[in-house]
Amino acid sequence: MIKDGRTMSVLHHIITKERIVLRRAELIDPERIEDYLAEDGYAALRKALTMMTPQQVIEEVQLSGLRGRGGAGFHTGMKWSFVRKSAGDTKYVICNADESEPGAFKDRLILENDPHSIVEAMAIAGYAVGAREGIIYIRGEYQKSQRRMRAAIEQARERGFLGKELFGTGFSFDIHVHSGAGGYVCGEETALIESIEGKRAEPRRKPPYPTTHGLWGKPTLVNNVETLANVPPILLYGGSWYNQIGTEESKGTKVFTLLGHVNHIGYIEAPMGVTIRQIIDQYGGGLPEGSRLKLVMTGGSSGSIVPASLQDVPLGYEAYRKAGIFLGSGSLLICDQTVCIVDLLRVVFNFFSKESCGRCAPCRIGSRKGHEILTRIADGLGMPEDLDTLASFATHLTEGANCGLGNAVGIPLTGGMEYFQDEIAAHVMDRRCPAGVCNMSGILHKVYE
Amino acid sequence: CESAPCHIAGAEELLACMVELLGTQPGKTSEDGRWTLMTTSCLGQCAEGPVVVIDDEIHSRVTRETLPEILSHYD
Image (cartoon, rainbow over all chains, first blue to last red; front, side, top):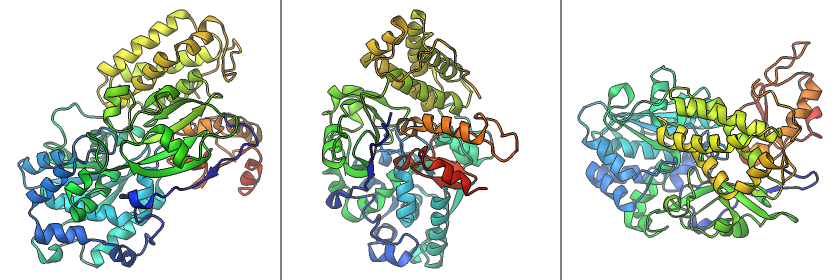
């Protein structure tokens, strides 16, 4: 919890030489296409359409090693090649701008500060996979992003960067914005597609994948905003340039959002492989006076609970396999000794119980029951069996859920139980909250409004 | 917003303050019909938490001290 009187300065850190996706942010006026054009704007699209075949574009992206920045980390070039290979004349490119992961606002930064970069990237993607139509699905709450994106699309059309026969070639492409209307699950690509189709946003059974059967049953490429923002630089400077940055399995840079008990709250873009300690010390200005690092929640509410002992692990996709650290959206919630693990998990489970689409039992029941149990524990009414129940939920959610949202509910729970077992047990066995946060009143809170 | 980053920034205390000031519980409307209080999931404004949205306006870094003044703008 934030103590009264402690001020947190908000700074946007800029590491000029390492910025790729945010290289134009705060340097150009995002509402002026002239500014964009003056900074290599649409040069990558021109190069792709006039000097490269679609196959060559895909090869450049494959060479770069770029992986999806929405959280799943699928190899982007491979996804593009799947859509390219899918039979059919009608294909779609969808930009997933539903960004709803708690702690994540990296996509909003790109949409608000450099909207044309996404227009350009989608046109390049359309050329590569054989699509003539693009849709940007922006969450309803991002009104400024929607406004700027619509304006950018209009400007691009006026200048001939969208529409018929771009740069005098046979390739035509246009984009429209589709507004979401709330719902974390719409960030799941098949739920997003259901939403565009006017249906209730529930993830589909997979296979088939959107690459073969997506929007309206057609081959569809769905890419996250940050993923796409990397594409024009990759085409301009080369896949092998991009491949030199980052780690063995995680290429390029990543936008990290830095929140919680740190002096400089905000965002940074840094090469993959940077550590939590480096981000906190070099970019975050360290922890405030009196704060000691207890844990970091990485990736968002669907992310890992990382103890201070793991703050030197290089961040990237491989960090999950090597140390259980889920990169996800790249958000880092820094927590000091005033944070209670039970309280944090309770808030996380509250989120999932409200956002679960309800389709599959592990997520529908696990998120709701898990929230009830954690609330009871925080009220000082936990029982030993509760710990076993939570452990079994972690397993069922991870193994049995129909989609990534359900799978992810188990991640913070597993981490919390692994690293803060004693703290959770103190609530149940000793009726005590070591961090002094939980009310432990012995009176049951009403859980639902 | 009641998600984890705003929670760490003090959203729960803020919510308690709002219940007091508005005279209504989360999920309900005040007696005079002027205010409906809802909690919501992450709005993507996490560096500026705790975040409160009133009608269509997003208010950032709201505190117990600044809340009464913000609410008075809607009188």
